[in-house]
Structures are given as structure tokens and as C-alpha cells.
Image 1 (cartoon, rainbow, N blue to C red):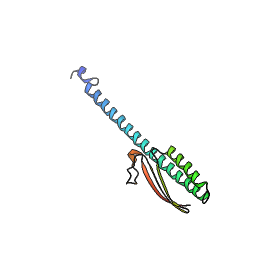
Image 2: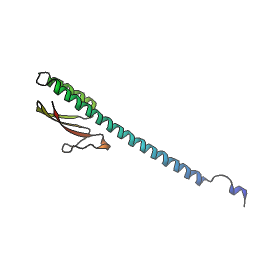
Image 3: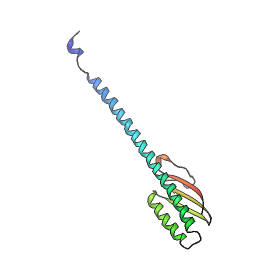
Image 4: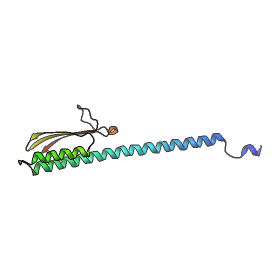
Length: 128
């Protein structure tokens, strides 16, 4: 056997190793992107829950007073700053309210959380 042919790496082996490395790095980037999307959705959901709790406190504290409407308007402004494309519909009278809060690109008829689009909808019955 000729010793010159048996030593070293061939160009095909190097190219194959680079291809395996690039596919591995691409898979890691896809996992990182998926984790980022999941974290953003979890952030939005936690903000929604916190805003609903804030609204319940406003409705309980200002029930029957003239300041309730002003506080609800401030709450709506804050919610629109926190959530992208927030749409808020609060209906009812003291002590029972119905809240529909949507954010992101939610279709008007649906009320589902779409993980890939960072959007969702929450419908909640609130007792003031």
C-alpha cells in the first residue's frame, strides 16, 4: 500500500464534517428561536393576568363612585401600552362585569391563543 494515499483527510471528509456542523448549529438556532417565542407568549399571558387582577381591584375599590370610569380609562391606556394591538371590551354594571381582552392579530370571531403569532384572547367574568 502506498503511504501517500493512506495519510490525511480527503476533501470529501472535510466537507461532510462542515455540513454536519452547520446542520447542528442550525438546529440549535431553531431551538433558541422556539424558546424565545414561548417566553414572549408566557410574558404576555402573565401581563394579561396581572392586568385583570388590577381591573378587579379597581372595580372593587371604586364601586359606585364617580372615579370608577376615570380609573377604568387609565387601566385601558396602561393595558394598551403593555400588550400589542390590545382591544378591550368591558361591559356590565356593578357588581358583575364581562371583560374581553384581545392582543396581537386575533380574528374577531375567535378567542384562542396563537403561539406563533404572539396573540390571544381572554374572556372573563369579573365580580366587583
